Length: 195
Length: 195
Image (cartoon, rainbow over the protein chains, first blue to last red):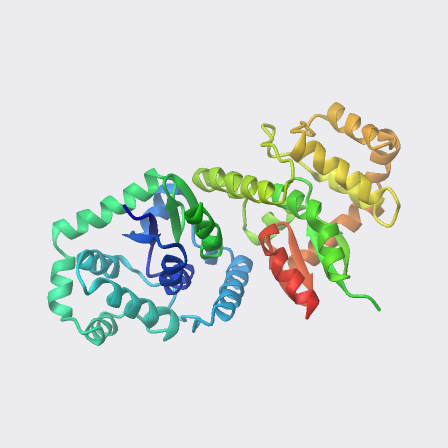
């Protein structure tokens, strides 16, 4: 049985984007497979009393700078999105709808890039539909599936599972029951997976 | 002229304690000298709208775990202080009173160890006096000096300077105008100092 680790994320989180872009490297480096856990960060914030770092202006400025530094270190294109925050409810339902399909990883990459590399305004339904189309999928069909009770419930369940395990932000990693928060803890995750 | 970096901290911050314990290594590794900036973290929180991570229970649990991991990695003794949070106003005034004296560094080490290694309750004036005595200083004389307008104003000025420079938490480092927040960014500070 091969090793796994859990990866909780939300498309609206810039730190999740950096983690996503480095996920394949982490898997290759450790021989472990990421178990995908798309969650709704807004739901996590609401349940835990946490908030986006952007809620504290001085922290928001710094976190932007910090992400840019890590992006440069890992040669990942990153742009400040002037449309932040993006309401990711529908997008995360779409991601959830694609779990266990071959479209999942390419779609997540495409959506992350749209927000964090290309600074697109996915709050605008037309832009969101164009993004889905750009990923080679049918926006009408995907959004219809994203709106089904099964998909909504699955996203809710993953979000609740995260909250129950102590998650308060994104991205969050688990190796067994050991939790690490943040793209800046991926070296710790790698170390744990190599033990 | 030798290189310097600014080190803003508060005794009540566990992350500041870890940074303090690694400060001499950072100086030795880079040949740069830390400019000491004792500040009042409570004042920074009030001005910026930031709060202790402990204000969000799930985050508080994780941050405790995170600090313990870094403490273990760097072989630093760290204990959860059941008397947290410690009101550090008087202590930080005492630290400020000792700036530019030979007593400064030994006292800061002693006070940090009392809180974060020995889990002492420095909210209790008797315990605080015993701690000062244990550092080889006269509690009555030091606390009298800590209560002078010159010392109070100097702590206020350092705190305001921190806020004006974008500080929102502790510890915070500056190399020139470049800022890093957190004991987990000391590798970045070292890298900047070596450039």
